[in-house]
Length: 488
Ligand code: ADQ
Image 1 (tube, rainbow, N blue to C red):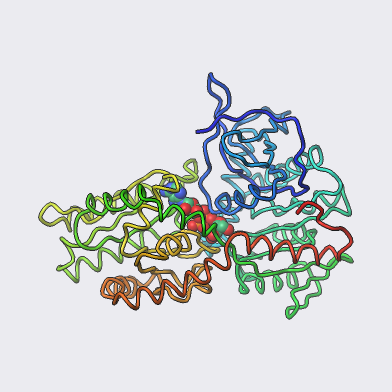
Image 2: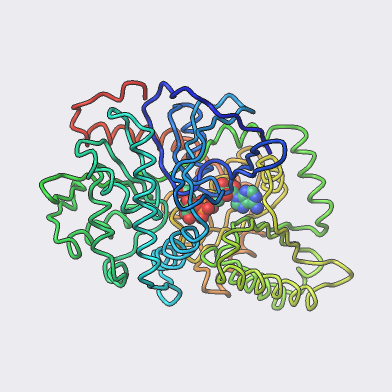
């Protein structure tokens, strides 16, 4: 927890990042407002960019406001040397329920991850989604200058580029979509699909993690919004405007993870984790507790392995670290019970000589603790049922650059198209996943090293700064060089 102080000055940079949640969640305490770091892939990715570029970040800080409140405090995080200003969007309890838990996480999130049966389509969710997107737009208009570069993030704010353009027709707006973009036949299931696509198309540039999502989006714009498209060069023509669509796979701060992995205290902590876990082999899962991450399917694969290869029962430990996520959403509450029940059941069956094979940590860990676990594990099981990219896979690879480890990656994670050295499995295929775990455990040292080296070349080269440079360059081009990004 860090203290935060109000700030009066505007940052010298003209980058404005807008996302649903920001770097931290604010808590009011008798000593003042405190900030608790947020856990999400988006935050892990954007924090280093804002740390070097400065600018401002407009987001909800987790506090509830009154109906009339739109903007909360403008704050700077005082505990490190970060240069950006956080403008807090105030949302009411009802807005959070309908826009965030409702439309964003009970409709768009499941649908974009191919869980159509979980998607809920409610008029009141949609209305709140429109209203809250307008609210973000008004915070932007109150705090940002005419020359600012506005970078909108993710599925919570798909309509925001449209609202911004209505008030500022010449605004420099770009959007990055962090989750998968489904094919048109799935996206079109949403009763308001056309409005969403039209809102997104008010951006100058739209980025996705993989060429498949780009293709899906362009096809959807063509079919649903009737736009003219150019698949080869990644252009969409709509309402007299030309929108560039690019693939920009997100990266991590490779050096940050490597530095932590070289730290003696963290190496020592890794040794302690191994000792405490017992057995010869240590498997690791690290996820937000989310049904898209395939935790239940992963447990089934571990169970299949222990059932059919009993020699591993007293030798193998699987640690699943799950960060609490979207705890007010009933689908997530149900998943938590299911995961905890399954782990209890499997440990009851497979504990031998008091060796408990599955360990479960339900909390957010700080980066150094996470890296200690990455170092301790023989193998990371990153097996989502669907994932835009997945940063845990990249963090595991970076932490083990000079160590040895094996990455088992789902074929349905965006990261699979970049990390060719990973073992790949279909998470729905229990037998295959289990066989890949055994393959990883038996892999020779030399093969482990070769695979890790190949993956580290990509993760190191295409890191978070590379991602930002790539995006920024395309954005400049999409703005047709009319304006220079002065301080970027
Ligand atoms: P997420 O779905 O949040 O991100 P992911 O990319 O794996 O998924 O990022 C999770 C981040 O949270 C990682 O940086 C990880 O270290 C951290 N984390 C996970 N469990 C933790 C724990 N218990 N304690 C502390 N930290 C923990 C979304 C998309 C992804 C996409 C990212 C970025 O769903 O597909 O990769 O955005 O675009």
